[in-house]
Length: 263
Image (cartoon, rainbow, N blue to C red; front, side):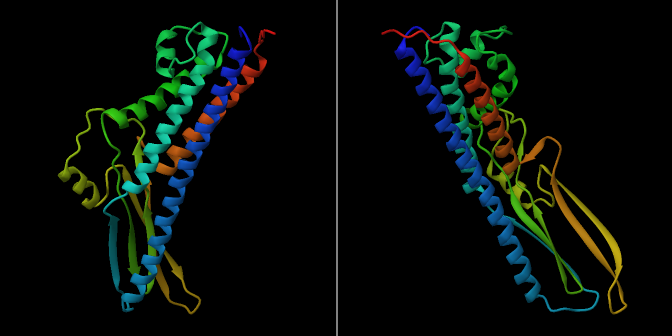
């Protein structure tokens, strides 16, 4: 570095990047908490519904319920993406001066200007280029081209006095298309179709013998995200973990840099 002021700006950018990383962690935690709250509400609903259904031998009833909106959770995903992108831009202001660029250079400009660079004073850039590009593209698509859309709910099966509750996970596309349409009819379809887009339903049965002798059939129902989708809480957790690892690499390289200060 040229002087003490440049060194202070480097430290400032690192601290700001860490602050944004903490903000991303906050919103990722909120997403996980909201998912847990929805699951707890589904279990309470299962218990209440079981009490409302009179037990009758051989009776089987299925109730499939969906939330009309998960916007509160998706707003936190948007905030997570914004914090993560801001963190990357502050990280770029650490790397840029080592490549002869202005410290206000964004991560997008940095990557475009050094598209073919495989070795530089900060090797963290080529090492993390693929993941950085993927995350920035996701965030920019959500801001400039589409809004996130998802469905939530659960399925209850009442059988001979036993209630089975299966949660429908909230899934996000791993890669969002900029040309995705968004109309009232499409949003309604996501909430009302038998199995929402992005989900897979599995059902199995097994026979067990009760302690008092009768043999009964028990069914198991599970929902999972389809190929090309990821659970919303997993999406935030994984990207935040990658963001932390990226910053650790950046901090290690920054700590090894040679600074030239002036008196």
